[in-house]
Figure (tube, rainbow, N blue to C red):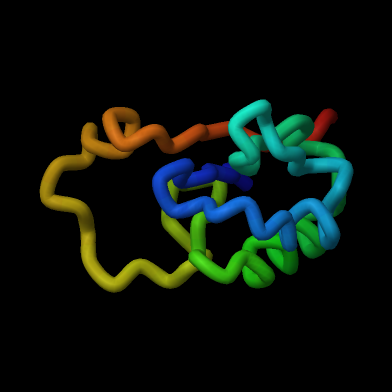
Length: 95
């Protein structure tokens, strides 16, 4: 599972931290960041993403398919995500 935070959408509600405190925290600007992609179970992380009022937390499966929020359309410029301040973290399970 891959977790991303779209910093341009985060409004510092901190709902994600209330649900998954092992995974998310606010940075010095009050924006959610991923502190540990293995800090909570996948189910809890998905619940945290659903709790975000602005849909700033994006979850993808291991193949890169967005599973939350459900994509409405593909971006016209796939490289634009990094230009918009999206933090990406790959959450891989230890073997």
